[in-house]
Image (cartoon, rainbow, N blue to C red):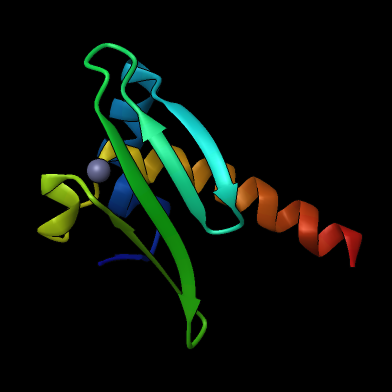
Length: 90
Ligand SMILES: [Zn+2]
């Protein structure tokens, strides 16, 4: 489980995501399938909010160790976009 504090905390992962450009598929709000197009590796990223804090987890090795991986960074970008669209529609 990775706590998402500030953008700088996952900045490295975001930069990596920009380079790798993984494909993110939305399973449902808060659940994403991230595919590395180069390797074909697919991982599941979940985003959730607990006590006002945002957490994410990923099924890859780094994610299981609690490190911010680029899968999380890529999924969080989509998640934030969806969350703001939801907020705007209510
Ligand atoms: Zn990952």
